[in-house]
Image (cartoon, rainbow, N blue to C red; front, side, top):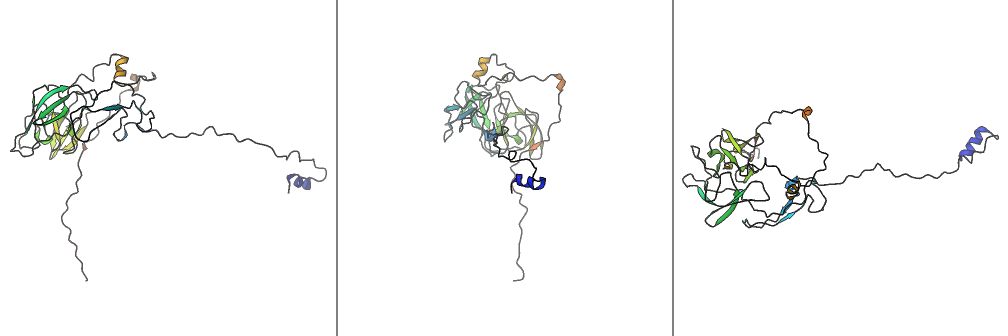
Amino acid sequence: MAVSAVLRRFLGQNALDLTRFTAPASCQIQQNRDYWKPINVPKPGINGKSYRRIVHFKDKYTVEPLEVTNLGGRDPVTGRLVCIGIGGGIKHKYHWIKWIRDGPTDLKVPPKEEKVLKILEDGCRTARIALVGTGSELKYILSTINMKEGDILRTHKGIPRIPVLPNEGDAYPLGALPVDTIVHCVEKYPGYGGVLIHAAGTFGTITRKVGTRVIVKVPSKREFSLDQYCMATVGRLSNEMHGSTPVGSAQRNRELGNRPRSGLWHRKTGKHGRKIKPLPPVREYNVGFAENKGTIQLTLNGF
């Protein structure tokens, strides 16, 4: 039943003609302009990606300089700009560092000796590198402050009863080094290669030993509890003036691969205060092997 017929039924014959009020009206659907579609943009620094360069490694270790593809802050697959502060820069060759210092484990065998052949500047890292060799083997390692051509480096993986007195550049397990020794390129797990303390001028310190664990203080003042068989290189890394040397000019900053900032950055003043927080507890790195709790004997009864 129409709306006008219902009104006449209740209002009588003298009701107004309401058909003109019930005529169909046209309407327009307005587009919702508040709709926001999120864009899946990859984040920088995830899964080891820095979006600065891609190094074309070879199947076998080599001391030949490797080719590099500069990304300029863009994702290598989509080409989308991820890091806005990276761009340009001088293209450098990459020198493959061998992070594992291998040597004999028997204490009756003398340490492995290697000779420093050359000290080089690497544009892809802050510290200098050293080309060392023994026999027919050549490899790159990180150079220390006082390392020079002709030095003899020693490497041994055994832990004697009395701590050794190492020289700069020697590699020994943490358990074989005395307390207060300055180290770098420290392993997290035995045999995995040095992953801690790579930056120019940095060093760690062996603070104390607790059983089979060795406590190492890294440059950030944090302390790590590592296994005594983790290898470490003795000495402070080279190019110690890197952190205190000013860039000098905007052109030099572009040569280093840094894009200019927007200018909206403002230095914090004294009103914000300094937040002095306690250091976190000692972090323990352990391989986590399953403990052998003995043999469980099962019997079948009632058969």
